[in-house]
Length: 140
Image (cartoon, rainbow, N blue to C red; front, side, top):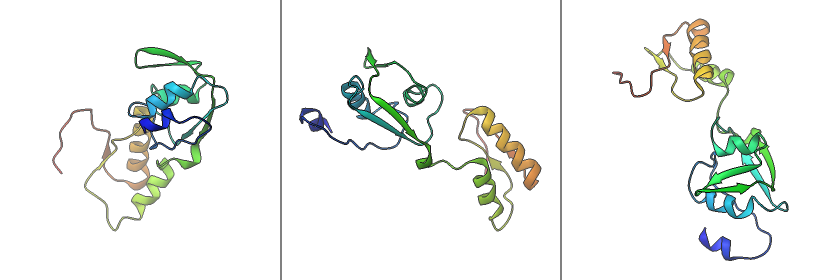
């Protein structure tokens, strides 16, 4: 990955899907975001408060490695490549289970969306569901 920065000329850099919160992608962004000839293609969901979400919402600069990096590259979000299922897809997956679990834990997603999914599980499937508090412990 570090060798990419030493190569001149156009290139396509493929990084693991993520939200630009850490890893080698930060070095690539710091190097290439400032050039209008470049494009950053964001794949999938970008959680609020992440660099990926900032880029998706039109940020003009990003703070990385203690520096403010100008965003001049074209930013494109390809939402169809998300590895996340929506509430309808999750409910369909749950309905396909051979039997109802004792409890469904909703542990991934924005707090409001998680609570809406919990509500739908309880009301549409009539299953016990909860959004556990961060750090809580449950027996399974």
